[in-house]
Image 1 (cartoon, protein in one colour):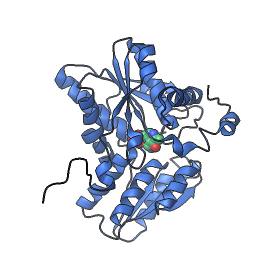
Image 2 (image 1 turned 60 degrees about the vertical axis):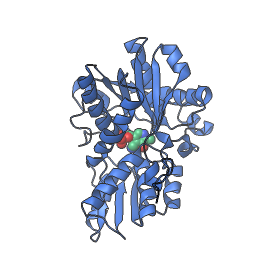
Image 3 (image 1 turned 90 degrees about the horizontal axis):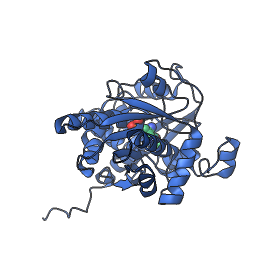
Length: 334
Ligand code: PMP
């Protein structure tokens, strides 16, 4: 039999990755730089987290920790859960998702539609034994064999996914012409994997690629990069990014600088992307692009700055795209 044509892919997982870079024309013109955003929202589960979900499940299968009829348990702000739930459905696994009840209702609805057992829990700090990640770990450890805890924060297979796929795709699509990579972090997987890959390639090619962390208010990482101290102030409407600790995935990442983006700047950028580019994305994408523009201004004209569009705006219709909700938070789409 002939091998399938290249455009025929093997199921849901065959469509993960190889997302395009989108040139943001207005922002590029304004800064005199190439502002390129990797369209991670085009992954089949709608976010950058499909990559980590796939690597985590396939690693567990390879190590014979997960087989037919097994269960995947995870604590997630939603997108990793969505990626896992898609793959679990395709492979006949059960999926249990522990999610802070502060996350968007659309994510929970999608998880239920995908057949996951969704357990919303009150948000608690990481140190609390009832933090959603710790509840997920407990649930998995109390379950019978053939159950895994995906552990996206400290399972470095997550970072490996980005070292082996996202980073090389960016390098290939920029043909090596890249001056800075800018992105926010939740688990540290994306930043940790992409930063390592690009730094290594930059050194081999004799170029310096600047790695910049974008951080929302309420996260401790901006202060950690700037002063070495994990300290947070304020809060953010963003979901899936910002953290109070250095995860195993983030540990050792070569980061040159950090920028902090407040919610108004993120919301304004989300609406600019909608009006100017016809792109409907979530708030972490707004933070990423606002930070990329700031880095482009610091570098000056003639540079190429790459960032990510992490997920779809459709997950946030009741919030980010709801004028009443925004107003109640003191935020404006302008
Ligand atoms: N943006 C969104 C919307 C996310 O859900 C996540 C993952 N939690 C991220 C960004 C950050 O990705 P990572 O976990 O790889 O740091």
